[in-house]
Image (tube, rainbow, N blue to C red):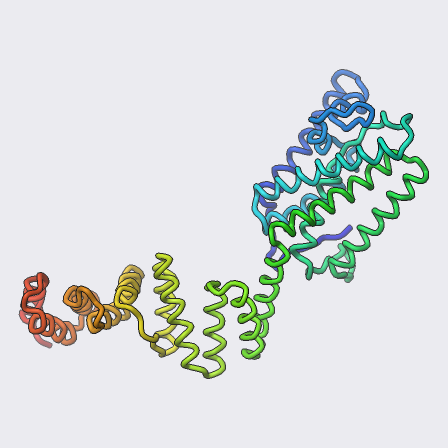
Amino acid sequence: MFLPYASDQKRTRLPVATLSLLVINCIIYIGFVGAHAANGRSYQSLMAPWSILPSTLRLYTLITYMFAHASIVHLVVNMFFLAVFGAGVEDAVGAWRLTGAYLLCGVAGGILEFLVVTRFVPEALWSIPIAGASAACAGLVGVYAVRYYRARISFALTPLRPHVVVVVAGFFLYQVIAALLSLIHNDQSAAAAYWAHLGGFTVGMGFATLLGLRTAGEVNYTQADAYRALESGRPGESLARWNTVLARDPNNTTAMLETARCWFALGEVDHTQEMFTRLLQLHTSRGDRPAAAAIAFELETLKLTHKALPAAVVLDIAAALEQKSNYALSQHYYNEASLLADCTAPDAALLRAATLLAKRLHDTARATLLLTRLIEEYPGSPWRSPATDLLDALNDLPRP
């Protein structure tokens, strides 16, 4: 028995769709067992209407067959694979796509089972029912293999951690050989099961490829490598990896931020300021003020300044910092905006900066300077009156 993992995150519960599918399968199995105990009918006769019968295919059974299991062992094995692989797949694609992949791969496996049996197995064996979630779970293995192609699999109670590619290749080869041998020996049940696995697995890989999960995996692993390189004191290597991410996605804000940090670690102040400036512009253009405020604060922490920005962007950053209660930095950005040629309301920006200095930072001297400047430079300003009132209030305060 083995336990694959998708990340270093310690999971305390299964994701919602994976857990729901697992519970549904278990409830249906309990229902069959209960019906068998209640009315004495054989378990196989109860399950048959919901299984695929090659002799008389009913389309609805292409769905229902994957929720019917022949025994408790059959159920437990399939649910194990659903839990460990489904959880990783759901992390990658979300609940709805996980459910879609499960059903799609199950249906594909059922169709392949039917085609193989009705074309290559003697007709006398067509009445054996085909049931179980194996094809659907094999499909999730296929999706997992595409997305987490660098993962290693840890075997319970052993130090073994083989690469997922080795395990999946072994799984696929075994299914092919077993499927061909079962056909040679006219073993309908085994042939159907193995071909169902192959069908589900292949469709799962195709599904993952169409969703671009291979690319998503490459980006994820490149980012992980970049983080490790910087943590290990190799900013140049980290920078190269983040540049690879940016080449694929030029507006990836995580990559931009980490690139700026790499440049700073390398002592390249100009490149650092340029990347931080791009981030400020991008966040404000997206309306993400909290992110812009965080970037401005990091610049301040590093004792750096941004490059030239439009006044509207600077005002957005100032407002975001004020919302975050970073009044000292906020008033700095308001004051900066008031000095820019393209600022449409420099008097309003001045008043806001002075107000923060006076009421939040209790810096009477600097507030007085800004208010005096507003009154002198903008005599016709609609903000002249509140500026005068605030200045008078400051002048009336007792001097230390």
